Image (cartoon, rainbow, N blue to C red; front, side):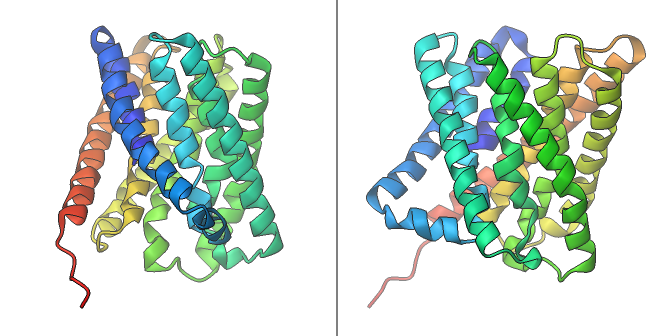
Length: 297
């Protein structure tokens, strides 16, 4: 949820550059409050770290806090370069540690039917480091992380499709994670466009159609996903929609002519959809936490 909100502010800043800093900071502040709450949970109950790392679904989404922190760090850059870089580096290192923990646990207890789309998050989510890398330095590291994430995506994508098509259906509790299928291609495109001044037409020709197709697939899946009973897994609906819009809006500035206008208009439509989804999920979260709980005798 924090990642989706922080990224939404960054996405709208591409459309409204005159209000860029205000949009980024407002979204980053809300996201920071959410991230701090998660951090407090693990500080006050450190045993939960090991428990969450052992869970095949929960462990896969743990790096989203680090990803959110990277986006928050990017928003802080105009205010304090030192603080922004320090937070960004800490977030990248945290993500890598969580990635290592995820891989260790999943290799040890591997079962293909445990695979869910959120398994893309630990290896491919590190590309957020590239999306948020402007002004941070560490260019060689950023390019290495981007290449690593991209390779992991293309290796894991056919395996994930095999699992989804030929193995047992995803349990209802983990079904919202299907929305994450829409994120990796768009994230890869956004990361590539951020670190490349002169993007390759071949790369754009591969990533852009894939990103649009995967986002469209999630749009169709929403017909079923939004009918599921509310659960914290609804947060999986947010970032994939936002990064899809971000990728297309970034692409608009890299191409010319009719394609620039096409990608801008499509990106704007996706941004409106993403805003509706993030707002809807946020409202459902608020209603969930305000819901009276039965008192224990």
